[in-house]
Amino acid sequence: MLLQHGVPAAVSFMSATRTLPNSRDADQQLLTIYAGYRVLLAGLLLFLQQLDLSHPVLGQFNPQSFHQLATFYLGITLLSVVLNRDTIASRTVRSLIIVLTDIIVLTLFIHSSGGVASNLPILLVVTTAAGNLLLRGRLGLLISALATLGLLYQQLHLILDNGISWQALYSTALLGLGFFAIALILQSISSRIRQSDDLARLQQQRILHMQQLSMGIIEHMHTGMLVLNHHRSVIIANVAALRLLHREAMVAPGVALASLSQQLDQDLLSWLREPDFRPVHFQNQPDAPLLRASFSKLPNPAEQEDIYLIFIEDQGRLIQQAQQLKLASLGRFTAGMAHELRNPLAAINHASQLLAESSLSEDSDHRLVQMITRHAQRMNRIIENILQLSRRQASSAERFDLISWLDDFFREYIRQDPQPVDLDMQHKQSPLWIRFDREQLYQVVYNLTQNGLRYSRRLGNNALSLSTGTIEHGKPFLMLTDHGPGITPDQQKHLFEPFHTTEPQGTGLGLYLARELCQSNQARLDWIAQPSGCSFRITFAHPDRIEVRGP
Image 1 (spheres, one colour):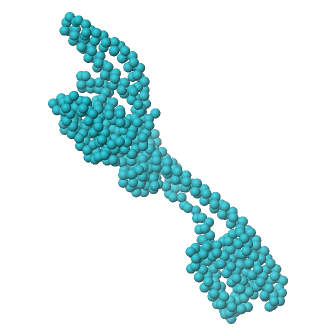
Image 2 (cartoon, helix red, strand yellow):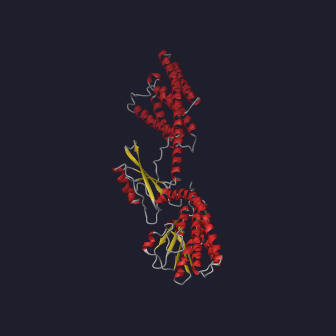
Image 3 (cartoon, one colour):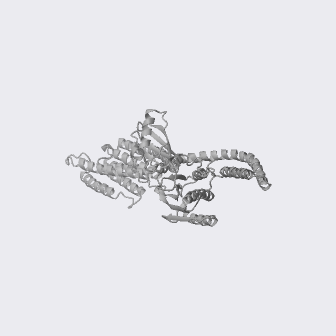
């Protein structure tokens, strides 16, 4: 089953390969066919013998005996059909009893009809052939030998009663040789057929194994995969595809692509009309990740129609990997820049301190020195923030309880903040498991808390509201809301841009760094519109997700 992951299984995707019957099943079918042939033969012999009792077609030498034997033979053939079960005896034992019974009964039929001249010995040919197909090796040769001995035995009786007939003896000898020839030929053909059957079965097992392997690979792919027929109905949809499309319910076989995603269906039609078409990124639902789709077409000669493949990728993962590359490049650049700036900046700061300690004649000189010191410190904070971004290592996410972590964080924060803090914390469930880098989460929450309290204190209060819970698909979230003046639409456009700030002493890197850290942990930081104040929500990745490492 392809679609698991806590998400219900989806479409069963490939037609099952038809299983080849094994040798036991084939032999049982052959035995069943032969049992039916025996019933028809017994009924036919009895019918032919009853056509004209005064001049019987069969059993001319002993009509009464032939009639009784035919009636008996019909009874035991019907009984053998009823008793043809593995629970009564093994297939080999049942086959041996049936074939031996037929040799004895047919020999008696031949004897009562005048020997080999009656043309009934041809029935022994069928029995010998069936015996060599049902019984292999020595048992098959034994059947041919018994058929030959039975034919010779009844012919000797006829010679004793009616005198010798060289033609009859010659025909009997030829039939005996024919029985052994049939045995050798059928044994050889049967052996080759079984070898071919074993080889075909081995190949089938390998194909089934490869199919299972392919299904396993598709099931565990992080890339979503949809396979469609020429009607654009889903044949295969792996777990990743349903997760990315935010589909949790069972997908019935043959469901239309449009019912899964209207945008995908439209993009596929556009691609079919124009092979160079490149679909734009899309969201299947408002809270779904940003997706990118690519299309391919495979011929299907068996059904003379094309099969369409759709690969769906989470653009967030690609952004995360690109982010790691960007941060690595930025780190190398800022490390060199900071080294060049901090030395002269330290000299300026040191010189301003020396000027402040010296005897300055005018107050304007003091103000200029304070201005130099203040701006030197501001530049130093900017460099520290940039270095903080450049030094950041790749996220090392771990699974932990957000509620207990927040309790520890704010206990420490309140102890260090010189001003009172009024926290309103609302938790919809506890514990609430998340997967995030602990140090990086500390930096994100610290930046958001600092911003929130700063704007709340502008209106004369120290309040900050926090709420936690889960949104659809089981993703945890943390929302921080201040009680400040909020932001304007113009400020909203530049909210997460680096170095954009409305604070005279701000660096404009706090929210930018927070969002970068969230993206590195496959989380999202969003501004949420509120009637008053300002809210930021961290939407964490599913706690059971598989960690994706950047370069």
